Length: 307
Image (cartoon, rainbow, N blue to C red):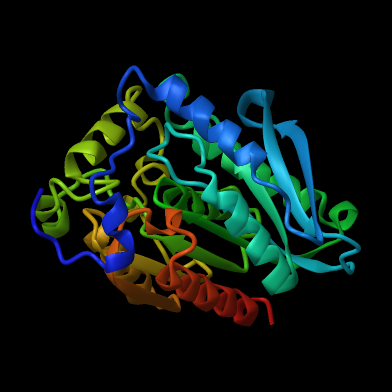
């Protein structure tokens, strides 16, 4: 492994790469699901698991995070987790969602979209789209303000964020009021400088990224390539205000930067932050002061978006 100047808080995971493109994936996903479920709820949090109709009317699960006795007309974040389109969300997401709910005073719909290698493009992204439509259609019953629904996600989930907004626009439905994309996957061409440079970074790197696209696009792109590879969308001017984070030592670094530039060129308000010394998936070290500061900053971004 190259001698990257990784922040001290993340050196404990510098040898970590998830076994997501190996025969161990089912065991790994089972472990992640178990660990997610056993994390205790924070005081004041209500968590409900629901089943809704996903792509082709198959059932998918969502988790509704909200405050106990939350006021009506609350803002909402629809969240899509990362994991290379094949992995369950890691346990840290549960704590992250609860922190967001308590500190932003919002509700969160966390989407368990279907995963590869069994379910490949477009199943997962269509599940995410239907989850967003479900929130829009049921906003009154959920006591959610329909004009304050944001989309957020990291890595593969970041790709879902932009794709769902593109699908909503193309299908003449409302796009979200805001989108947050953390070190997002944006381009199946994989031809950036950071993709060339970061062949052995922890958590995620170019070889894993290539395996991800090979798995996700096993059946090809179908009718709209941009719903998978969002930097290849035909237009960008309809996107909502956007916040993007990239990690310094991440093969996806330049993809996030390039997508930001595409939005700016289309006159979309977009902010981008580089997390110096960070690696892909760095939030798994949730107790890190570095991570906690990043989360605080994102919370402030959401608060401003919901004004």
